[in-house]
Image (cartoon, rainbow, N blue to C red; front, side, top):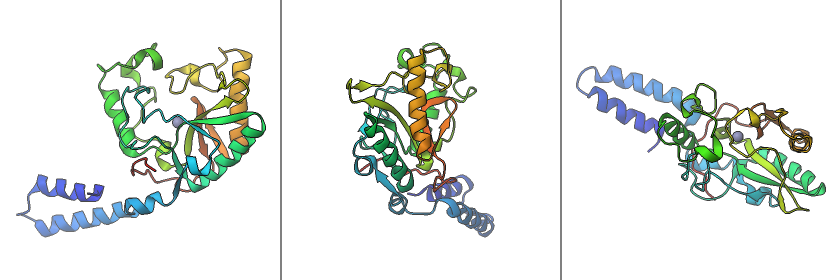
Length: 248
Ligand SMILES: [Zn+2]
């Protein structure tokens, strides 16, 4: 059932259908038409604008944390049906160029997340509202009270990732066979994750700047709160928050 259909069913369930039916129906039809302007494409058509990173960026290493239980929630996140990563064709093309750049420098890109369905964001919101659930506090937010996650912007009702042109990633060093030391880990909730945080070593800071330099050189823009997060500057769907599941 589409979201619009669900809304219609919910509307009729709530209002009944005996009095003023025609008037209510007219309102619903207008509302549905307005909604259809942004999200009427069938799921299959929406997915057509996307590619898997395994196909588009074969040198990238995938570690899809929201498919696994090793993430700040502690369970697989809604909408992650396969351990794969999707991006819009445009973002994937830019990421391929960034990846080629990395390979020339002796690195690989390691991907933690890319397109994120709206239902996954809703899962985060549900989790954040349940302040008693602190299963993954130690590895991800040991110094933060969970009740501040909304107020301080760590969790929001929408994420740029749902527009399909944003990626979370780090560098993997081909010489050492390990992730590059960024002085912090993906999804750490705290000021230490700001790319310009200076309470880390010079080498760690230089590593953050190297990742940033590579991504910016290939058409991405950074986020001031998370060193691992980049969005394609010319993203093709700047106003659309998709909800089809992550699958091959
Ligand atoms: Zn991100």
